[in-house]
Image (tube, rainbow, N blue to C red; front, top):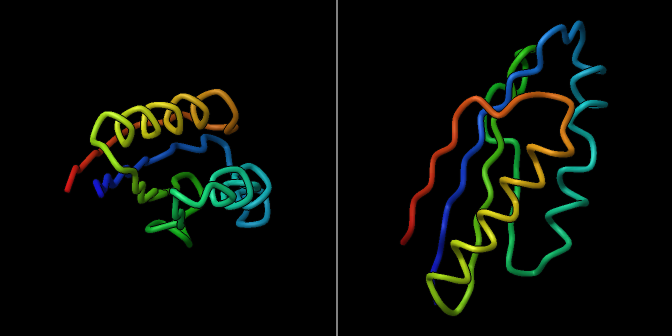
Length: 93
């Protein structure tokens, strides 16, 4: 099995409250956590209004499959989240 860790730091300009932040980031667990090959969590900046950091752990039989799923997650986050991905970190184990 191959394991990949994808961490995305997302900027949420103009976010005025934690409630608004939760609304803008809502569905991250539902969208990505349904896949049995993916674990997802908000890994940092939980109390900061204008940023959010999310980490995805991807497990697949081959490294290309892990890389492909990480690419898919990153692309989908960029399209669906009301914010901007500012930093992406990937680690393959």
